[in-house]
Amino acid sequence: MAGNSSKQYSTFVVGNTVYEKACKSVPEIPTVSADTEILATLEDILNGNSDIAPQAGGFYNVKDIILHPYFMKLNINESDLILMAESDSLTRFRSSGGLIRLIPKDLSPADVTISKRLAYILRHGAIKAGIKISNDGYVYIDDLLKHRCFAQRGITLEKIKEIVWNDPKGRYDINRDPLNNRMRIRALQGHSLSVDELELTPVGIGEFETIVHGTYFQRWTSIKSQGLSCMRRRHIHFVMDPEDKKVISGMRQTAEILIYVDINAAIRHGIKFYRSKNNVVLTEGNTDGLLPTKYFTRAVNRRTGEELWSTNE
Image 1 (tube, rainbow, N blue to C red):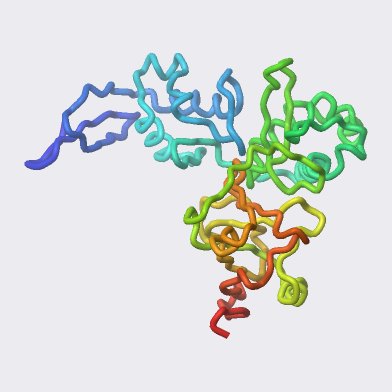
Image 2: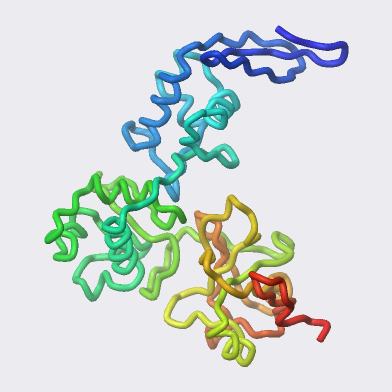
């Protein structure tokens, strides 16, 4: 145990590493030496090999994980497990706000093709493909795998799971239907299909000061004229901070122009905004499916920082 005149510290050992944290009173912290086994067990759980249900984007709640018999036996708490994962020499894990997932592996070109077909059907093509889609956007995976674009390639449930867990943007939600135990999957946003129950959380005035939409120079002339458009999708997509490394969805990394929007002014004028399970901000715009330019505060060239639009002009 280590300490000084003003603070007390508790320590616990994982492998050859000693972790130390300040505390009001020193609790009994178990000494754990089998760090390789602990992190291997965590990795196994995050690969879907347990009864613990994942959340959107392949994230798991750490509070659920520490209730697994293995971790309960070791008496490992939430903060200790997160600390171990963040100190992993193999950098296998990503944690945020009490959630944790495996860092996605790079998809092979073949898997990228499968992912694109999957996204198309879940967002746009299920009805045309003859695949039943629920009001909340779910498709049963066994129905999906019968479609020729998957069946002809021998795509399996395990391959779909692999693509979902390794999707860098957390686009998908996969789980078992509690009514019949069948595996199902949905896209979290980006639909042109009518999907009415996507578990979107309304955004109120004051939750965000500014949100940002990413676009390209080829669309800029049209946007300056009419504003942002849903186009063929149900919503216009935004991020809260385009430079936040934790932002994994809501804007293409290749976007050339960043458009900053006064979300609170738009809400006051009756335009509704929502936040998806993977933290994308969405709006259907006004009755014409547009977000007018009067809500823009600035637009910049993402590469050079040049101002392309300013409310001071």
